Length: 111
Image (cartoon, rainbow, N blue to C red; front, side):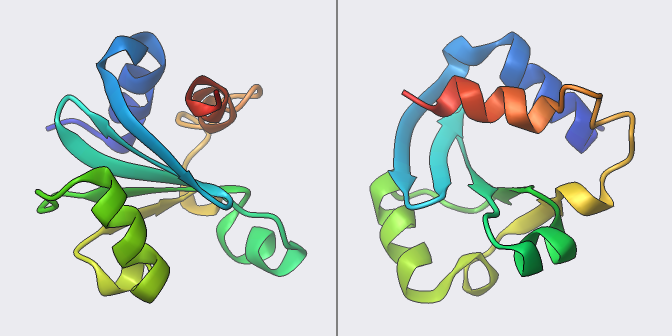
């Protein structure tokens, strides 16, 4: 079974599988190999202290469009949608290298 580290490395090494990118404030929603994800950038000290600078959300059951996911998240947030959250603060150093794989990934998503 793939780990979150494996998934992040796939994002970085196979960016051609990223589709349907939509930005909502400090979060990027997208599909990778058909599955829905989002990457949030934390901007306040309180959020950074609690979660780290980035959070990656996986929406395993999401079948509607990415734009519908953006709308649904704006109303209720990821915790109100079937989502699995991976917060930077709880990831091991094998996932977060000195240059931060999540930072590199956000750069791929940014137009």
